[in-house]
Length: 197
Image (cartoon, rainbow, N blue to C red; front, side, top):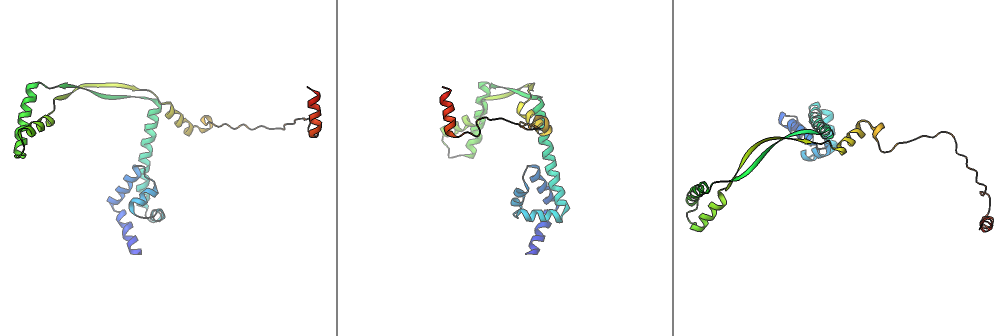
């Protein structure tokens, strides 16, 4: 049993194994999920991390990269940005060109399907030949406005003392309230209430 565990850890400390671990960490998997993917318990993964520095470094490297990517994306979204988008237009093809392409398609399809009827061959050509094409019009810059939710999330985490929802205020001193009815019985309170009507 110990030999099996040792050979298993050795498999994951190879360059290929370490790249796989790093990739899972970069994909955002937790240690529990990574252990599951390996086929071991989470406690075994923690033991491996204590024994093999290269496993720790590989997981850390993967997590650091993905954390930075997410931070950068959140920051970019919070501020807003300019995106470049390629625009296309779909235009119909010339009928003569479509006919030529369909005849060519029919001939090739007939060779692959000699038992097909004429109608099946024509139907295949109709389905197989495009009647439109996409033309690239050019690049267009679009302004993506700042995202309020992303900005609030960023500020609440980066400046929690200034941006948290719950603010606590501490009061000093005492609060003395004089209640002249505190020691009266229910009957005495009812009598006073009746007299004030």
